[in-house]
Amino acid sequence: MATIRDLRSRLDLIKNLKQYTMALEIISATRLKKAKPAALRSGRFHEKLKNIVMEMALSNPDANHPLLQERNVVKKRGLIVVAGDKGHCGVYNSGIIKEADRYLRNESREVVELILFGDKAISYFSHKTWPIALKVPKWTGKITNEQIHTISGQCIDWFCTEKMDEINILYTKQYGLVKKEIVIEKFLNLSLPNSGQILFSPDPVFEPAPNEIYEKLLALYCFANLKRILELSYSWELMARNFAMQMATTNAQNLSETVTLLLNKVRQTEITKEALEIATSATI
Image 1: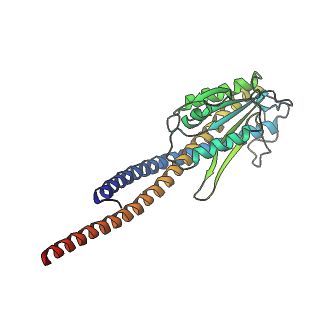
Image 2: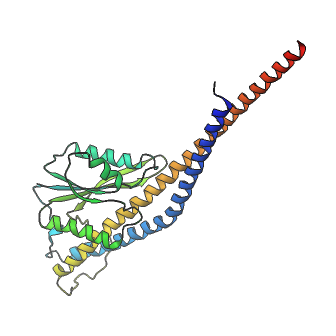
C-alpha cells in the first residue's frame, strides 16, 4: 500500500503537470485567435486569384503555360508533407505521417522525392530511405512570405525543368473533435476547373500578351495556394493542441481528485491505527 509520503509526492507531480497542460492550452488558444483569421484571409485571396486565372484561361484558350500542362508519363513525382514542429497535439502529426506512409507504400523510391515541412516529418523520414529534396524545419508560426515565395518558386522550377513531372501536397484540411481529414491534392501541374463567376467581358484584350501575364499570375497563384495550405495547417495544429491540452488538464484534475481521496483514506487509516494503539496501551 502506498505511503502518505508517496501519495503527496505523486499529488505534487500531478499538480505540476496540470499547470503545464493549462499553460499550453492558454498559449495555443491565444495563437489560434491570430492564426485562424490569417488562414481565412489566405483562403479568400487564393479563391479570388483562382477565379481570375480561370477567367483568363477561358477568355484566351490559345494562351498556354508549362504549369498548366499535364505530363502523360510521370517519371519523377514530388510529395510535399506538411506536419508540425512540436508535439502535444494528439494524433495530429502521427496521422499525417501515417497517411504519408500509406501513400508511399504504393510508390517507388526511384520515382518519389519528399519535400518536408516540420520537425516531426523531418525527424521521421530522415531515418527512412526515401530521397528528400527539401527540408523546411521550424516553420510553424514563423515562416515568412519571402520563404513561401522561394519554396513555391523552387517547386515551379523543378516542374518546368522536368526534374519533377508532378507534385502533390499532403496536409490536414479539417480537424474536429470527432473527425479529422487529411488529404492529398495536386500542387503541380495546375488544374483549373470552369469558373462560375464572370470577371471579364466576353472578348477582353490583355496587355501585355496572355502568356506574359501567365508567367507572373500563375507563380502568384502557386504562392497563394501554398500559403493558404500552410496557414490552414498551422491553425488546425493549434486547434488540435488546444483540444489535447484541455483533455489532459481535465484528466489531471480527475487524477488529482482520486489521489487526494486515496491520500485522505490512508491518512485516516493511520490516525485510526494510532488511536487504537493508544487506546490499547491505556487499558494495559
